[in-house]
Image (cartoon, rainbow, N blue to C red; front, side, top):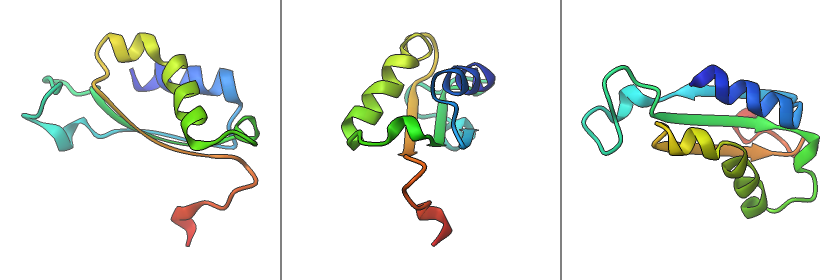
Length: 92
């Protein structure tokens, strides 16, 4: 599932930064968790495609792109989205 998410995001947005992190182990026993993981992900992405889009539009675009994955096993998706012209908040 992690690779599928990464592949779809790469094809759609040609990101300059992309990290797809499986955080399922942090949610063991919580809703939507299942043995073997691949249920809870964090996506960190930067792309010029997000230039001029507000936060809600960016989230909707990624959720729409990953609708099949969200309907078939991905329970939670934490999104950190920025355009290439925005500074990386993690670098501060």
